[in-house]
Amino acid sequence: MPSDAPAPLPSSAAPEPEEQSSGGVDVGVAIDPPVDGGALTMTVAGDAAALVESGSTASVRRFLGTLPTVTVRDTRDPAAVPEGADWSVLGTAADLAGEDGQPALGVEHLGWAPRLLEGEGPVVAGPATRTALDGGPEGSRAGLVSAPLLALADGASARPGRWTADAELVLRTAASVRPGGYASVVTLSLFE
Image (cartoon, rainbow, N blue to C red; front, side):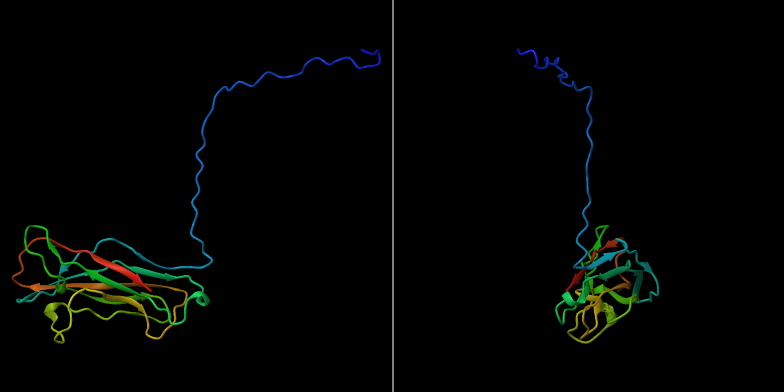
């Protein structure tokens, strides 16, 4: 080695690290749907309605209750909604099954009277749906089958807003109905 060359340095390499312990970290994320396009949505405030006897006569037994509040929200940009687009909420019930072995009560015994509770603009509550014991025009259908609860008024255009509605439920049966529990499901559907 020439005399003017620097002397080699001692090795400074550190030993490999030894793992002393380890742990895991859970990573999660909740990604909401995009809000830029908006949406037309429906929610129902509850999942049950109890009917209680009220206003029965010697020939007809009557039971009343209230449908849980239904809310429709339209957050879409009106410019993105096709001209003439409308929406409606319909209700359809099944026959009321006897829970104690008694025969079912047909859906024609169950009716309702919708009410618009909150909201402005071109939205209306559906008409009252009669029961088979209410009478009515010959050939007309009684009972909750595709019965309107809430809808955009005829000729109106969809627009942003929030509307709430419920309905008074009414069950009318003959006075001779077999006692016991009866149950049905009312399916609510939002159509556009």
